[in-house]
Image (cartoon, rainbow, N blue to C red; front, side, top):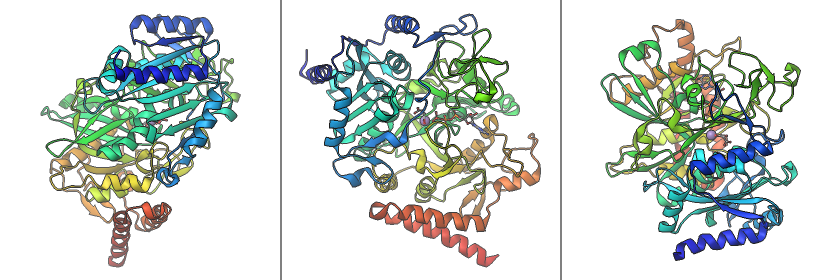
Length: 587
Ligand SMILES: Nc1nc2c(ncn2[C@@H]2O[C@H](COP(=O)(O)OP(=O)(O)OP(=O)(O)O)[C@@H](O)[C@H]2O)c(=O)[nH]1
Ligand SMILES: O=C([O-])CC(=O)C(=O)O
Ligand SMILES: [Mn+2]
């Protein structure tokens, strides 16, 4: 055994001494191991078999009804210095947090199996990839980690070679919301999560490692760990542009990453390639461009709303070998959620379906599935060097004001546009839904350090010789007075992406406004859409009075981060505010 593996063995021994499991299982990631876990979970009721004729290899997991989403109020970043975590995080002193967590973990695995999961985030041979080991007492977590990461022997070999890994300790505990904490120790590359079995709280490779810990590492190592999808758009000439887009949780990343081009585009030969649907790690390459990998190997996607009309690619992806969490089931035992045809008979809690109890599927019900099952899976997802990014897109759920699309003037403006992002809250986190909040770069719940330092890090990529992506902002969620979405969305979002690519290629002149460049008349290809001229005008309108108020609110928001907020960002906010003033005087 090498000395590096000893560090891992020592930590596993320490954890075992604390949690006192009946046995320890080192996961190898094999098919046989997965099948064994499934059989075991079918026996214990952790998994329920779905209709194997229609959905081979598909199972349902019903979680505790109090444990169905991320718990942002119980999620902490524990840095030595409080200000390093910033006002965007909950903070606890590391010693206090360790003491609190170790008391919870004390003896918590008695009589149970402790699983040791070596995993790699990113292609196993990629210099951009990073490894971790999750220790858990949940077979459901093991099964999901196998789909979501490169888990098992190859990851362990890389860990032994590198001698460096993120330590993640997890126990579902008693699922008592009063005894539930998700703690991050970025300076120690350590995560401790107790009392929840839900995805974002328990699959530690995902948000805890690949976003909170990785963003902290990325800051000192010169890269970016972001809550972004990565999609390749291939035009009829065979040229592919890769676009990375940050939308908050349950705001359309999976859907955009898998979009199916509108009929006319398909006939013309447009193709879409899915590289990632949730997380993106990017760094500058030798040519000055940003190169991105998807650290994940699977999708943990939102089920409700997924249908043949909205996301047929996702539906084909999840037709087999998928774990569904908190969906409803039909009379013939098929998974069901709002948006699908057919009728549910059993709701997500296993009760006979009664509309009086609310939706049949939980609004944050999810599917876990291998990325390779997606019909548009891009082989470039395995590219060790990553894909070059042509455009970065920010967006959120904004029922008013924010146009369908606009382009930032330059990188600095783009960082402001990302910092200023706002969105209505969704069911992906516990708490009220539909409340507008700032969610800078869609990283409010995930930036592992002070937002002021984070924006400074973003600004630092603007170096001589850098060939940075153009930055855009989109809003698929603008509503009319009747409360309905003005823009058809989904596949038709390709029309907006095409305009972005035209801007990147210098083919579209655009229309400059104080907040950025919007498509000029005729530049968005919407002729074959049932969209009247007035609606399109509304979608692209820049309401100066509304934007003046928005810029003031953005200014207050930036101020709230105090002295760590870079002056350049304040200056940029003032520049845009002034441009709006000047335009108002001129008109
Ligand atoms: N109106 C409208 N709804 C959309 C659009 N794209 C996605 N949605 C809906 O938004 C919800 C969430 O979409 P996802 O694509 O799963 O969200 P995500 O950003 O991947 O979410 P996380 O996995 O939580 O990070 C689903 O119910 C979709 O149907 C769109 O273009 N227009
Ligand atoms: O983390 C999760 O549980 C799912 C997810 O992608 C998000 O909430 O953004
Ligand atoms: Mn997400």
